[in-house]
Image 1 (spheres, helix red, strand yellow):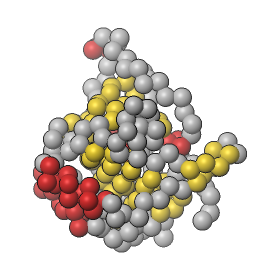
Image 2 (image 1 turned 180 degrees about the vertical axis):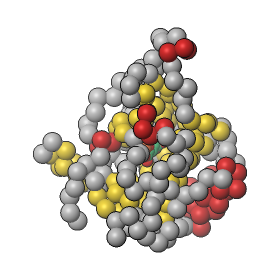
Image 3 (image 1 turned 60 degrees about the horizontal axis):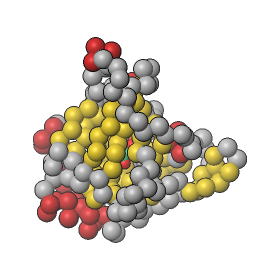
Image 4 (image 1 turned 120 degrees about the vertical axis):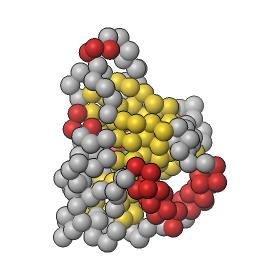
Length: 217
Ligand SMILES: O=C(O)CCC(=O)C(=O)O
Ligand SMILES: [Fe+2]
């Protein structure tokens, strides 16, 4: 596979996870997200967790500053035909939708009119696995579309950071929670899932996205 530029998420960034609550409210931009706690019930969570055990997760090796290392998590991409993407700088062809992931996509469409044609699934086996600061504004993502993020398994801190003020908000995402990242959040804010060494359980995250079909053809 041809190696291309790596994404910021895989740079060994220093992650300062301190929440900045010092700025008065008037100096903060409203966080362009909506958090829906307990969006999925236990039955729905379990069906997805079971299904995810069969996903073909991959943890590609990439080169960062001349050194090869595997990304500190594993990932799988499902989508409609032609809805390919890139992650960690590598081209990824869409695999066909698994049953429960597709049902969840339809539920998001019904509940929020969220249009998605692909989902990136990330698996973090424990708190040593992580994702660095980045934003999801790749050119293959359709303008004007929100990204829906679903958490299953371990509770982990998800941090968003204003690109200009560096003001941060932390969300302790729990199993079943939904976080909607509203367009154009990706232009104004970065986000990260920092290491949490005390976490021993695994976490699965689904981010439903809308990509431009045939972008890489
Ligand atoms: O695991 C998460 O909550 C974040 C995932 C993420 O930011 C991404 O897949 O782009
Ligand atoms: Fe992201």
